Each structure stands twice: as C-alpha cells, then as structure tokens.
Image (cartoon, rainbow, N blue to C red; front, side, top):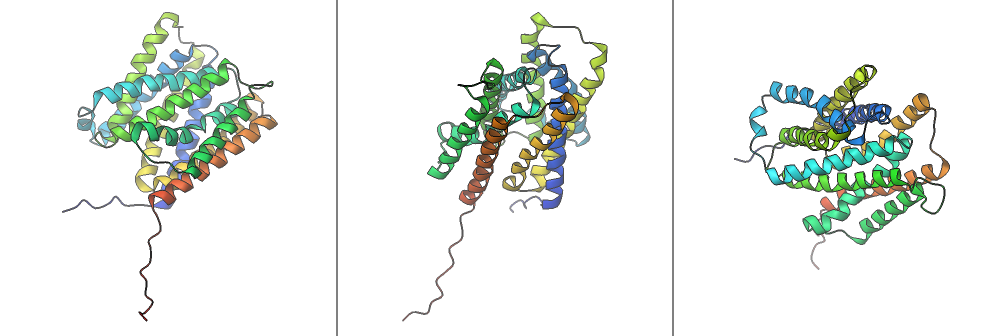
Length: 304
C-alpha cells in the first residue's frame, strides 16, 4: 500500500514562509550588530550555539530524537565545513557593508545551485536557465562594480564565497534528503558548524560582552523560529511556490538598514539586485515548467 502524500495548504505555507524570511532577517541583523566586535568565526559559533538548544527541544517535543543517529556522516561533515564558510563569509561582509547589499549578493545562490547541479548531480539545464544564471552573475558584477567604486573588496568577495558555499551545501541537502531525516539535517548542521567554527575562532576568542546577551537571544530565537517556520512552509506547500518568497527578505533588510543603521543601497546596488531577483524568479518558474511538463491531450478528432 503506497503512502499518501502529505496534506497541502498553500495559504498556510505562504504565511509560514513569510514568517521564516522575517525571522532570518532579524537573525542576520543581530549578527551584523555584533560583527564588528567578534571574529566572523566566533559569530558563526554564537549563531549555532544559541539556536541549537531551541532546535533540540523542538525535535524532542515532536518525538523525532530517534531519527538523529541514522545519518550519512561524510556528507554531514562536508555540509558542516561549508556552513562555516557560508556564515563566516556572510558575517565578514556584514561588518563592512549594508545588510541589503550583502543580501543582494547572496540572492544569486539559487542560480548557483542550478548551475552546480549539472556537474555534481548530473541534472540537465537548458539554454533558458543558463541564460538566467548568466544574467544573475551579471547582476552580482553590477553590485560589486569591480572596475569602479563598488564593493568588490575583500568583504564583497567574502559574501560571494559565502553564497558559493551555500549553493554547494544546498546540493548536499538534496543528496542527504533522500536518506536522512529533516531533523538530522538541521541538528547536525548546527552541531558541526559550532565545532568547526569554534575551533577556528578559539585562537582569537573574545570574551562575551554583557550588553550583547540580548542580541544573542535574538539570534538564537530568530534562527530557531525561522528554521521551524521554513520546515512547515515546505511541508505544506510546493517548493516552486514557496521558495521564491525568500526574495521578500530584501524588503525587511532595507527597512532594517534604514531604521537601525541609517543607510540605503545606492543606485547600482538597486539595479544589480533587480537583475538577480528577476533572474532567480524566472529560474524558479522555469524549473517548475520543466518539472511539470504540460500533458498532451489525446486527439479526439474523428478519423476520416
């Protein structure tokens, strides 16, 4: 007897995803707030350690703790290393550029996932999606402005490296999701990232400043809420409908940049972000078309 498909609720999925995006924006704002006082690796460690207890409690309350041990360790270890590169690169950039600029660069990640799926997963990508990938890279170059007074500095390149690590980590998730539970993917990612980032940060570890305790509480609670909300969103809705909502984060980070740090993206950053988001949205739409080709209707014309 085949297992029935999980129930779907498009409206609930959208609301959960919007909540997840808002929570992650709050978490990233918290990391930016402390990024100038600690190394990028130490902030990555804080991000994992503050979120981990809440995620562990969520797993235990759902009765899913038993799923944490039947895992494919080599890919989990690789994902942990990639997670350190992702968070550390992103945090290093956050300390030196507006939140919205860093987000504009990171938004190229879904395009990189599609490009990397060709050599790593053997997937086929048609000329339309390759065009979208190329345009997305052009958008990144517009944001970075390597020949002008842009952010093609070490900070900008660090965010690009973080986006690349995120893309490769997403490929490992596709592979792990076929054999390991969603709970194990979240739990071991946080555990391994805390271990690896903590080891790298130990030499230059700085004592925690008391005034940052509230910020760490925000990072941990927002990170856990975002993870739980995103899990519900993808459980209740189709990925092709839910994933594009990640781009609504640009609204929240612009509001945060304006109200907290008093900055706004400049005109080239707006243009580059628009190109990247448009390319990403087209990619999501195209992947849905490829995944669900139109059904050819039978020919009902009577024979001559």
